[in-house]
Length: 220
Length: 247
Image 1: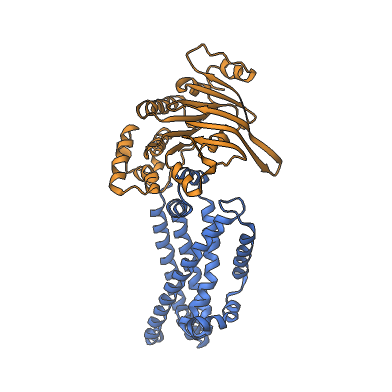
Image 2: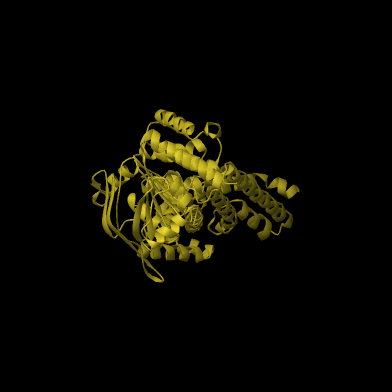
């Protein structure tokens, strides 16, 4: 316990880094992933703006990025990361690969959630003279909102796990802390304690997510 | 009011080419209640969707108020649709919106200011006698109440035409009667032209002025309802009318 007490400042810094990375990763990946998922939904075969060629390209791109093991993706895009944040090391540098790996996850999940929205409601909106933008914002997002909240929860938990790997390029964060101070320095109690903290963090994310999603869902 | 001329609509399905609507022409008068009746797959739902171009016909003309909708630009078509209400068999209410929000939806789409929206929604809630349900979500309502909300929503933007696609097919006979009485009242009070698609002869008999009998995409006969004296000419019409109740 003493060792943990000694490491408290580093642990607090690590938590801070996790939240910092989490905030930016989720904002960026949701900001790009949700529109991309919406676009996939709108242009998929049989949908309102069917466009097979563009759908095929985007769909494949989403699959390819999702297939990449995160560690390899992170290293493969180092030149791009350097271009965006000016460096390939550190907390800011980690946000780039984390966001890129989360965008297609977001897109795919959002596309699937939108498919569950009743087609009849969309037809109703069309009969009222709604534009596509109005259908997306006033019908699709409203009817799918609890599913969207679920998606954010799922990606947040994935993020906690992936951010551990990001320690390799000096990202820091709570997972990196567990590996560096617990695993590499042979301090099993530190590792154990940190893992407990991570479990609690995931529990909190999951519970909060569920509460929000239930509150948003008026279908049952 | 509504002039459908030589409407044809073809679907290309995996099973081959399906002619859902085959060269149908009909004129529906202002203030009339007109029903398209026929068995499932007769093309009536496709035809009613041609009136607001939810389905774009492959051939023919859709003339509403002396204007061919097929010649309009997309933005103009959206404007016209705001003045054509529509109700559906499965109500199609927004599940995550209250009764109030559902009814005000078409006004939001049309960009009506908030204060006016509130006033109009309250009027329509009174018309369908649901003022006490204003804050409820659709999940709490019965089928009949859901359809009344849908009716309020369809008339909130003061349309000239109301399209009803199987409006009572998911409802029991008593509720059907209530819904039909609301439709009749709306027709009489506001002079809204109503087009109904149904497979229930009783619906047509209760409130319609004229009935168009459809079979395999064709309009085979138009019958004026005037008590018990109407005499269907087609074989199919005779089957429909002999049933008395539903089919």
